[in-house]
Amino acid sequence: SRGTTAAPPAIRLRIRTPKGDLLVYAVHLPSPRHALGAARWPQPGELVPRLRASLDARGRASAFVSSMVARRDRPFIVAGDFNLPFGSAILRRDWGDLTNAFAAAGVGFGHTMQAGIFPVRIDHVLVPPTLRPVSATVLSGYPSEHQPVVVDLAWPD
Image (cartoon, rainbow, N blue to C red; front, side, top):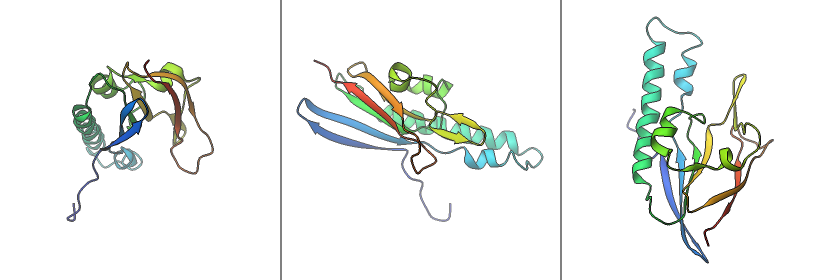
């Protein structure tokens, strides 16, 4: 703690477009990195509680951000580093009413990060039925451990 506060799990941006305002929620949920690091040299009785605490922290942050998203009949985008793989129970619980743009319009697995030897998709773009994903691509060679997801969306008529 050291007197610091954690960064908020999301920020909300409003973009004015010719068709009206578009809300964009930029998400960054807590990382499992420290808990997974404990798996390398686990202390007796430490690993499972650390992994559980890490997953619980992501679950609480996801539920909080989901509750702040204004799910009205207007277009919005929720995107960013969820630190949750596609298909996770937390994603289904908090975001199951939204369309995962890569799942709907991407090709392949769409890995956004190399976690050790395992490629995973933990960065997501989620949209309501008022927006339709037309295409989704994960860029490669980006100078970050996360590769960006680029999505083309069709605005409602």
